[in-house]
Image 1: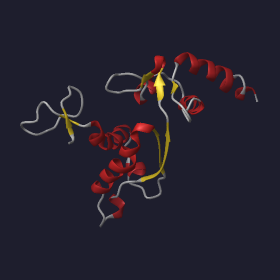
Image 2 (image 1 turned 60 degrees about the vertical axis):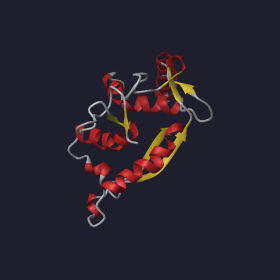
Image 3 (image 1 turned 30 degrees about the horizontal axis):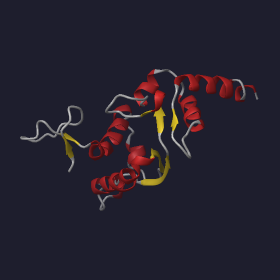
Amino acid sequence: CITRDLRWGTPVPEEGYEDKVFYVWFDAPIGYISITANYTDEWEQWWKNKDVRLVQFMGKDNIPFHTVIFPCTLLAASIPSNPKENFSLLDSISVCDYLQYEGGLKFSKSRGTGVFGNQAKETGIPADVWRYYLLSVRPESSDTAFDWDSMCERVNGELINKFGNL
């Protein structure tokens, strides 16, 4: 079952399936690679490189997808007789509890809840600042929340005022 009856998603390009979209976990691997290709012509440096160490950070509900379905999709799309065309496979996965959005809502692209890559980029906040904050609130033993006020306090109080003054 790789289709859903939803309004958003990647349409199934087949006659008779006009009201169907691909299940998000089926088309996500295509999206991971295509988003990289959208930003750089050198996308194969990451996705078709035996020397790449692919490490993923996931919420606890994504374990089956990212440890079974995603690697199987990449293996199926690889060409065994031509190793240069093989996709980079998962080397390591780090899983944690949920990082929720302000007010305890689960991050959800389908519901538009949370902050996602392009939105984070549009804020103008440097990637290293995002990395610092997200690692500092990473939910290791229970769910935690992303909060804009908390981010400002932590970045200003710790990253700038403490580490910045060393």
